[in-house]
Image (cartoon, rainbow over all chains, first blue to last red; front, side):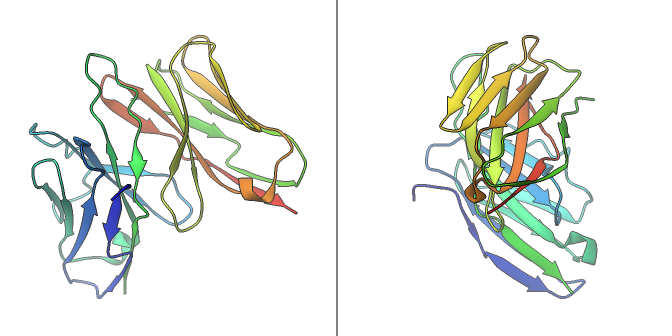
Length: 118
Length: 109
């Protein structure tokens, strides 16, 4: 597809259940990012994948959160034992790696998955 | 710790008015971007600035990068209801990407 896609668009789950959120980046984009956005707030960085390098997991809020990426394509964000405070929109973005030392870090975002934990 | 402060946090104006929103930091960035996010959607890239003092125009939107590459401003001329949204700035430097918390703009007809 032309842009970043995410599924599902909406997810309602009961507290304590596990959820999986999927992101399909733009073809050829080597970098992939996950963010969390609570209602009316800015973007909170979660995790970053760049090619075959070890992911930057420094933004994951707890060990209930994990993410995987298959090569340079699909990524899955998993939240185990969901809590009500996990309710938010989860955004995925991808960017192309620019050759050389300088990168403009232009990111292209998907529409997000709205997660509601009841 | 790198931070990007955006101001104002909220702005509500009438159609046709001009406005400026700001993005400030004590850190130097190699590039800075502005995004607009509409309700229910992901942020959409508006512009990238990379050179200190750079000015870019996108129709009624004018973006400026500070001379020291620590701050930026976005000026909208004759705002329209379609400009309503959350405006986010993002700074990039040596692999670190920092988002501001955004300015929520509402333009009333």
